[in-house]
Image 1 (cartoon, rainbow, N blue to C red):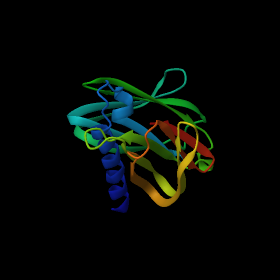
Image 2 (image 1 turned 90 degrees about the vertical axis):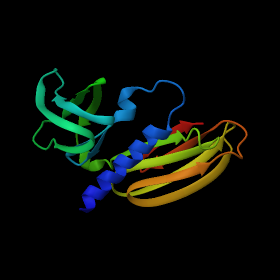
Image 3 (image 1 turned 135 degrees about the vertical axis):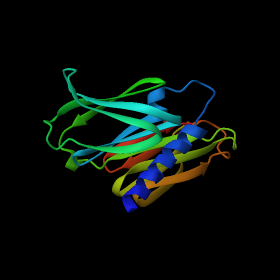
Length: 196
């Protein structure tokens, strides 16, 4: 039951990002509709659509061979775990086909136990207020994230540390910052930078 609640929370985070992240420009289908998060030997596929759709999921090997195929009927969104425990280490691809087209997501199956899986987004919430941003982190397990906000001259304006289990979301009001800048999110030994 707890796992189902966590998966729904991740789907809601991704859905809110999809809903509020519009910039007036056409978004790529892959970034707004599917995401794959890995944890140990399992890859979780998160899928969202605007309406109920039939979806074909394939896992493809390095040489293009189809290793697994599945059809999911009539859902707006779902989360599916795929266990790679019995597959050799290497590069694989998730291929997801629905009415809007084909989406692909490359994954590397290696010593996953050394990695702490996470998916990080920093999106402006257009239409609500100028310079209101949402930081979303989805994953599994215990995390500590360092969040630093800099102006365009690399002056540190904000620094915070967030400890959480599985998922995290926070709104940042940057209206007082009159210049462009960037946000640095550090999770373990990985750093991601988002410009604003």
